[in-house]
View 1 (cartoon, rainbow, N blue to C red):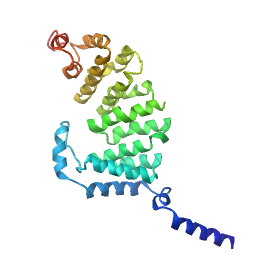
View 2: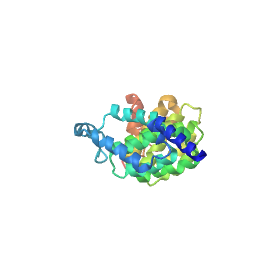
View 3: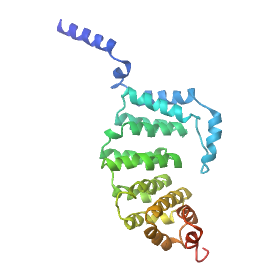
View 4: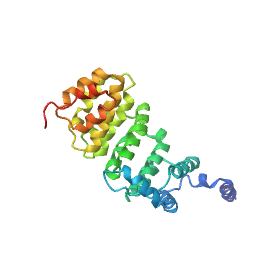
Length: 266
């Protein structure tokens, strides 16, 4: 008889419980993937794909064409539901990234942002694996570098040395992430020569996207400590890719820029 009362009690609870709470422990990666993919298909806009494709010169912009407002609305919905776990996010990530669609990878980053306070040091390798799985453009890499990874550093889940292997990663957008992330360190009291030495291998990187990231970092460093930054730039002015200097010297006056012209042609 007691078991009957327990069963009835469970049924009453399920009937009264909000749907999103019932699903909390049962949502599977495939279900979340299908939910997000269906959302993308429902709101696809080819005109936006055409509009934004000009910002992705390094390759084809394969996208659904969702507006930022629609992405934000879905993020708010996912946050309100409160049924995300770290494992669910990482299990869903490769399913979303498999298509190569811009918004599907964007949703991976959104999901990560929603569970960032639940992450542990053991999850860092799973974040690194995303570069192999599907971080394939500057926008997603820069979101990680500008917003997500600095938060992990604030939580003491990552430190400067954790990026040592990223500098020599076979994935160019993982390498780009390092200087972009380190922009956030420039106002923390860290010694600039220490950062310059850490990033020095990227001064001879073969990829344009990495050159842009390094130049951006050096431009921001120059704004804060121009003498130290110029010393480093002078060391590399005759050998580093010119795109790095184009970005790094952007805020200098004409005379300042002239100091960093190559002495000899390569």
